[in-house]
Image (cartoon, rainbow, N blue to C red; front, side, top):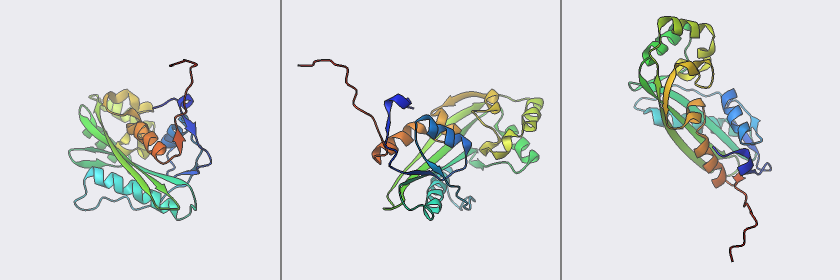
Length: 212
């Protein structure tokens, strides 16, 4: 992810984040992006025959389109993150029992985290979409570690019942691929899309060197 000093942010290009996720908000703030937040309320049930990647990408686009109903200009960022293992999608646990089940399923194994985003122009309907996959290894958790973690209440609003950037970091042994993708936005790919849309740009740097 590029440092803030390496980017020029064109703040006149109004941005709306179609998500109430504090993790996504923090990631966008780190690159100096100015944006509004609008929560999108959509049906997140998986469709028959849909792969995890297709599901993730569809929801990201639907969230952006839902937010666009109330946004008249600028660009909208819709995003969705899912955790899956054995072709089973793990959403946000509904309670203690489901959180325990998910953590027991993940412990000692690799799983995949898929985040998709859709950058949608509210006026033209133009879209830039990406889906990124990371592979995560969870340590072989003890029953006590699982129960103690559940008591923190952190698992309950997280896909897969853990937060890689929070208390749940203790259980992560290895990440292959993008860390920010696991948090909730693949920032390298998103920055490329923002540049493509003309929202951010890398300024020319002059070092006073004469090349003649």
